[in-house]
Every structure is written in structure tokens, then in C-alpha cells.
Length: 316
Ligand SMILES: [Zn+2]
Image (cartoon, rainbow, N blue to C red; front, side, top):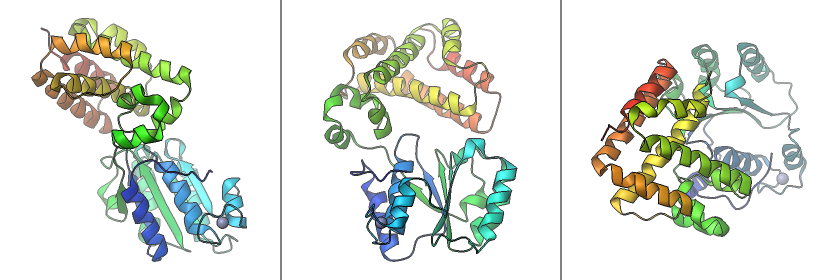
């Protein structure tokens, strides 16, 4: 786990976290909501360093800081929600009840909490309600919707907002023409510092743009290439993110809002933007939001995607 300076965006979250640590009022169960690549894990790592450091300032020299840096800190359980089974959950709950653990501070972090099953949530309820042994629980999620009301009501919720263009431009001066494609997500730009990653992402956007630009019946075959055969919700959501970005770029193009983007993509976008009007694009964003909700409710993914592609822009 790394301590990262400077953090990009979401200054309000950072100030809030510093305040609760300073005043000793850290909520024992927290939900952190925001899209992937917005910086939730980075913020959380920093928060734990600052909260637990023996010097109270992420000194990176004390025993706790060094153990955190080498992922050896006994009090921290960091779990991936997509791979979390009931056996692990039971052992974590059991461990939480034990007071013998040497660590002074303790936390359980569950990333991708939107992918947990109802059984796992139910098992966690008691722990969320009655914190034991000074444990803090952090649930990181892309959306609140999949989390049961019983879970939400037991937690403090922290929201992450997309990072404004001017802040991203300051943080990534070398990636000016890609800022408009990052959709407010600093994690994307960090990845795009590698040219191969950048090209790959632009290619994917171009593919989606070509699909949207073609007539409805011709969209399914090329789209199948982008959607894995046994796609999991997480894969589909990633593809929906790309498709949504293409539609947002079309919207920016149609409303005359300028955005700095890769030149090749810019040209292709201009052609597609002429084919439809603003009304179609606003309707397309609604279609996309509906598809996302259906996927969360686990309506047949293939059917959802097929309907979306056939209806997202009408035949003209
Ligand atoms: Zn320290």
C-alpha cells in the first residue's frame, strides 16, 4: 500500500477525513461511493496512513507506517468484493471478535462492494451495527443501488465526485488532449501515461463510436466483439462506461461545449454528431441509465445489451 502525494480532486472528501481523524470521530462503518478510477483506494490508503501513524502525520518511518507500506499491518484486512465467499466472510467476522490481535488499530476494507451477494451482506450486518474492538469497516462501491437498505442505514456515506477538467489539466499537463476522455477520472489519466494504454482506450472509444454511428441492425455483430461471451456485470459496466463516454462526447459536440480530445477521435465524432440531433442524444443517455439499472437488478445481461444497442439511437 502506498502513501500518495498529492491527491487529485475530491478536496472536500480529503478535508472531511482529516477532520474526523483530528477530532477522533471517525464513523465505525462507512460506504465510499464513486466510479472506478476516481481514487477511492488511493484516498483510503492515505487516510489509513494518516489515521494510524504513530506520529499522526503519515511519517512513513514509524513501525505502523512501514508495516502499511509493506502490506504487513496485522490490523488491516483488505478484501476484493468480487472474490469474497462466505467462508472468508465468516473468518473475518470471527477474527473481528478476537481481542488478542496485536495491532492497535483495525479496519476491514471491502472493495467492489456492489458485487457482494445478499448472503454476505446479511452476515456483515451485525458487525456493521455493533463495531467490535475499535474496528472500522469501509465498503467501497461504484453505486449505492445494489447495497441493501439495511446496510446503507448502518453506515456513513462518503461521495466522490468526478474531478473537474482544470484540476486534471494541472495534474497531467502532458496529457492535454486526453483530459476530455478521462470523464473526470484521474485513474484513467494515470494509466494513459503509458502510450500503449492510451492507444488501446482511444481504439475502444472509436469502436463504440462506429457502432453508434451505424444503423441499429448492424450494431450487434461488432458489439459482440467488445462484450465477452460470459460477461460479468463488471465487464459490461466497463463497456457501458465507454459507450456512455462516447454519448457524452457527442453531447458536448452537439451543444458546442469544447473539450480537448485526441484529433482522430475528434474528426470521427464530428461526423457522427451530424447524423443525430440533441434530442436523440439526451434520449440515448436515458436508455443507458435504464440499461445500467437493469444490469444491477440482474435482468438477463445479453437481452439488456441487445435492447440498448437496437434502441440507443433510432434509424434515421
Ligand atoms: Zn508513521
